[in-house]
Length: 71
Image 1 (tube, one colour):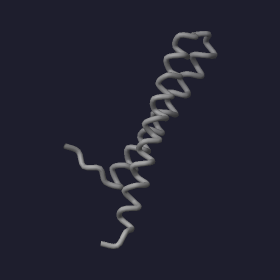
Image 2: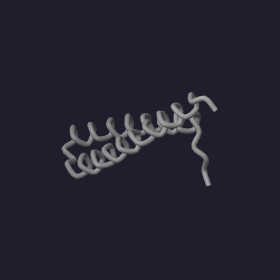
Image 3: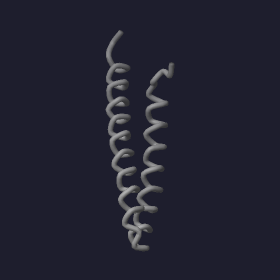
Image 4: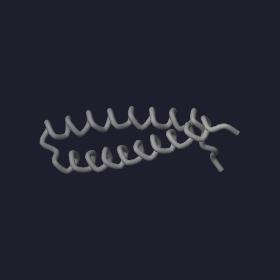
């Protein structure tokens, strides 16, 4: 079982953003090349990555709040 920590959550969130940048670039190239199917698939991937990034951000915020609370 994987343990979520502030460090792992931040690392994962950063990786998601790099993936989103790559997929966004590929989607733009697909659009410029007239590949509408590729563009749609890459947009779907981008939407999924954005949802994952949002969840990781929420996780990081909840972990950080818990760490700040007095024991």
